[in-house]
Image (cartoon, rainbow, N blue to C red):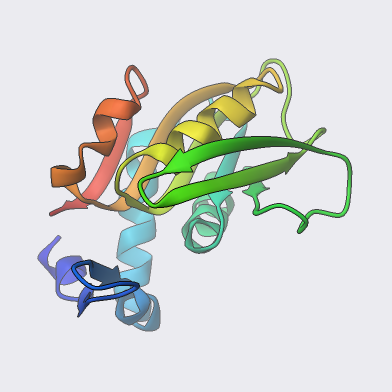
Length: 171
């Protein structure tokens, strides 16, 4: 995991003063590191009776689509409002610095689907929890969540209660 950790760059005071942003773009640029991250993200879920992988906009699309391909599953994009062209279900949720919303196509998942949700970062857990609620509102079961980076000090894992969580790097 140190190889992956060495590819995460700290950007101080972004997007606002006092925040240290964990930049994954050096990891994305390194094919070996990207391959390693994808393999480590999917490893616990091999043979897990999953039916789909969902990725949270935007960096969750990168890792989620690659994991879905490796597992031989379809990919479900969880998008910001107004980005999906078909009928959608929406959820509004609160962030530590405001509010946000996510949408998914109504036919993206349904009863009997077991979904793995993937994103690049778990911070306070608000977006991840909203993603779980959105998929469950369509009848799917959230089997687990996986993240490249988890910021332990923000306690996002606590907001996600009983869901299994797999994180590659903890800060």
